[in-house]
Length: 187
Image 1 (cartoon, helix red, strand yellow):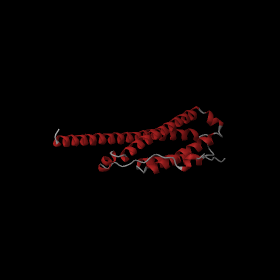
Image 2 (cartoon, helix red, strand yellow):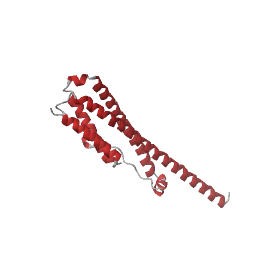
Image 3 (spheres, rainbow, N blue to C red):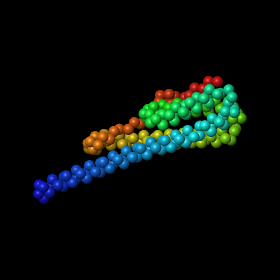
Image 4 (cartoon, rainbow, N blue to C red):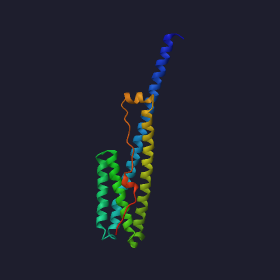
């Protein structure tokens, strides 16, 4: 093989490597976007369930209007953060606030035996609990994809292609400090 042939082989190998690396980065980026979309789907489901839950609870919790108002306000704040495409940290904070107010609502409902026995309330509570589990699973899936994407764009030699084509690291979905603590309910 001549010197020109070796150079051509090296160029072909480098071009093939660059194409393979670019395609891998795009695939990881799209998986991350898909994972974030999964979170959106579950959050929309939760947003749709909350008004039904509040309406079911209203008749029973005549003395707990403040709790119902906080749930409604937290839902509005979370939806607003999502609609205006706030930063991931702001969206996470709004979602955590909503989760905490829902936990408070369920804790308050323990004082109302008729409510706890109401079929609609129980069904909505189960659906909301299922949705919360799906949101957590979607967040873990998203964070796994973010980890893979961020790792790939920082590893040599893929970081050369990632830097040249301006692939940026993604933020993880993280629980806030308050989310890690037990909720305190006072009656």
